[in-house]
Image (spheres, helix red, strand yellow):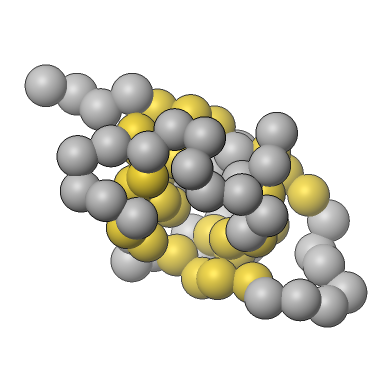
Length: 70
């Protein structure tokens, strides 16, 4: 079974605050939705839908900054 994929929102590089780097894929839970980079489509996060908020993830493949907030 293929996991559902949600594209994250690309944002400008934040001036401050916590930024997580992925890959490797960040995991909130194993059996979940794949959150993918809004620019290149790389899987960055496995998490239940609507459970992860206010996180910025820097994509190691393309350099884009992704927000978990829509």
